[in-house]
Amino acid sequence: SVAEALKHAGYSFDSEIEIKWINAEEVTTNNVSDLLSDVDGILVPGGFGDRGVEGKILTAQFARENNVPFLGICLGMQIASIEYARNVLGMKGAHSAEIDPTTNFPIIDLLPEQKDVEDLGGTLRLGLYPCKLIEGTKAYEAYGDEVVYERHRHRYEFNNEYRQQMEQAGFVFSGTSP
Image (cartoon, rainbow, N blue to C red; front, side, top):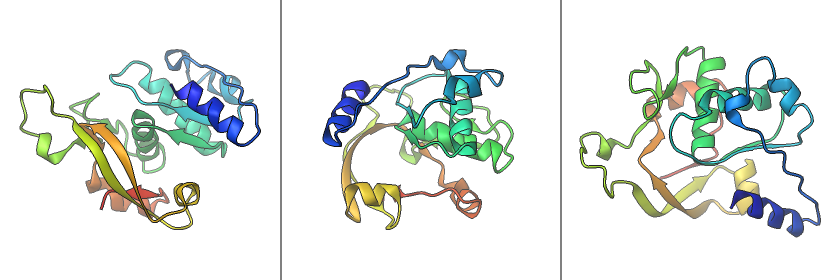
């Protein structure tokens, strides 16, 4: 579990990790600062569906605007991308096509090879994939290597049609599949 992984990471660095669990469905513009002002870092894990998504987006915004370290895993990374598109690039309503298929700004979209698939059984992209890291980023620092291999289980990914705009606005793609 994510909680166990955090605890083990803490042991590795002789640090005690205190986890503050927050229900994303309860995060609002009125309480996000109160809920998060005492944290040293934020982790938004993976998941499916729209439950708590707007609260997660507010959480990513809080992290970005207050320089709080943020780690987005799977859906969490998607959330960070959506938040940036909405609040930095001004793409009102930017979203994931999985959650809002009618969004004008599908920042997260189906893998191109999945667009015409109707039978969803066994259609996730699974397995070990290379990821090229950019030197000087936290990801590169953590791995200490230019290319790493990580497991994936996805049907949706960042929509590269928006990559140049995001990069020009300062969004860092620290790791990409070559």
